[in-house]
Amino acid sequence: MSHSLNFLAIDLGAESGRAMLARFDGQRLQLSEIHRFSNGPVYLPDGMHWDVLRLWTEIKQGMALAAREVGGHLAGVGLDTWGVDFGLLDRNGALVSNPYHYRDSRTDGMLDEAFRRVPREEIFERTGIQFMPLNSLIQLLSMVVHGSPSLDIAQTFLTMPDLFNYWLTGQAVNEFSNATTTQCYDPRQGGWAKSLLSSLGIPTHIFPEIVPPGTVLGELLPGVAEEVGLQPGAGLSVIAPACHDTGSAVAAIPAEGPGFAWISSGTWSVMGAELPDPIINQQSLAFNFTNEGGVCDTFRFSKNIMGLWLVQECRRTWARQGQEFSYDDLTRLAAEADPFQAVIDPDHGDFLKPGDMPARIRAFCQMTEQPIPQSEGATIRCVLEGIALKYRWVLERIEEMLGHRLEPLHIVGGGTQNQLLSQLTADAIGRPVVTGPIEATASGNFLMQALALGHIASLEEGREVIRNSFDVSTYQPASRPEWDEAYARLLSILEQTG
Image (cartoon, rainbow, N blue to C red):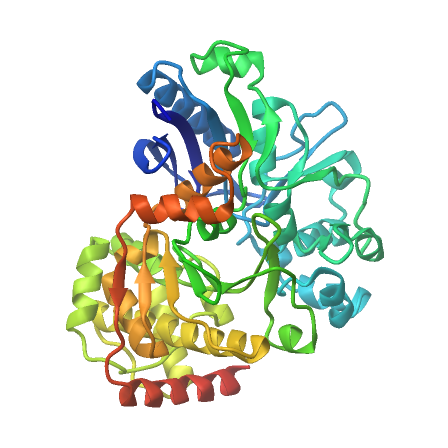
């Protein structure tokens, strides 16, 4: 390739969004941040929402800055976001109402209502998705139960990235990797689980075509192109990468072969294995694992772990109380704190919603009859050890179901910047941990764009590009006895708290 190609990866996370310019010379990838902006919930009288119009404005701002940076020479743009949340369009293609945030309380109690209407086993058999109150299926059921007029008006269901892609191109389709997160998709049948949806009273006519990762959706709508400073028909392709951010992140794992485990680490940690087919059986149901769509005919067999959300909420709580800590400050204080003062399950339901997380951690320790963390450092140390121990539990369950050992563990994403957590993870699981790239989601987003346009021939070739482009770090495990004792405490707590 005689010159570099320019791609734009727009990555929206639960805490922030950014537009990343990807320059590709045929061998290596260079990423640079063009635009970064905050994201978070907006509270209204009817609940917790996303500020979707501000996000749309930020997306266009990122595109405009990227176009200016490269003189309009962009080969492709791809967008990824978190999963499960969605917008509904009316018959004229207008957004019916502001999309809800997955942590909104409207789904409280709705899992039990779902199981009253359709047995838990049947829902899992049809979808292969772990049960969480935030799943799109449960959000939609809450709308049915509460008689939401939005469902009466709706003609089209689009997950968050699909909504933005519709505004970019006019194409109202759902991309596979994000569609599978909804718990409305049947992986065995390869389409929407319409009989299940009907059984729950959810209208099925709203679900449009599903397209695979790496689909070229088309060019920018003329009005959008003009607004961001690009000529209509200039050859910029809008591509659906893996529109679920974890799908894009896993695409960019710099593995050299099969048999590895992975974690995409950020606000959430998602831990799993890359498989050719879903695993839908009594074991995966009992352990509440999920089968989400991956790239290039793969599935991500995985489980969500609360992750660094707990650290973020602790930091926000202390800031409201007048104590400002950087994440580096909190990691340093945690490193200085005594280990294993208390063990928590980061996935306990008390930790899901926003609020005073340090108080909730103290309450959990009191409930489980453990010493209560007395300082900020002790609290964060307790959180990080709890996350590492839960990683071990999840890894053991994956290996139990697969029947073989997974090694190494690759960790990608922003959470890799917490070196203490990476070392604690290696110690907890007793095997090497390879971290990087930090910008895995943007890298995987680019990879699928390049694959769609024929500039990369395969997923394996794309991962070789990632290995050529980014440094990784390897953490070796230390002594095990203390970790084994702490893990036994976690197992006891899991049994005690259900």
